Length: 216
Image (tube, one colour):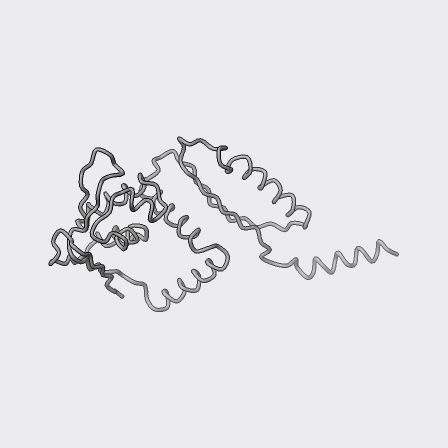
């Protein structure tokens, strides 16, 4: 299945022309963060203006704008200061052909996203998913650290509380303002500790039996 996404720009460099993208460039352009940049671009904005509007560092903005420039949908003007470089739409409109999953696959994705947003705020999920895409493209270089863990264990209430205390101590040691290294890569951490199952009924019955025996 396919669909079209379209944006119109006032005063594009070729304001009467429309760029139609149907090849592999579509995947580059439809990166969620890049598409947001195009949505707010208007008649043109500087790197710093886009950075402030999207709350994204100017270096990250410039990286994505350079990717967009390679597709031909925008033009980046030169400037002595990277933050002052202006990005202009290359045409009055762009139309991008998007390849979609089947109806069944789309429904499954929607259900999974709904579940995800219930557990994780949508803006947090967007930030982490975007970071994974950027890491795959090599934005952060070869030496960055990344950790994605999904662990399960049966814990007592006391053990779960102790885990939370230790984790909080690590967060307080590394993440408060002034505790990190301003020259380093900005890292994000989002943790969810939640019950995912009750103890087996058989185990509960064995515990009850043991307690009854001990009491007689």
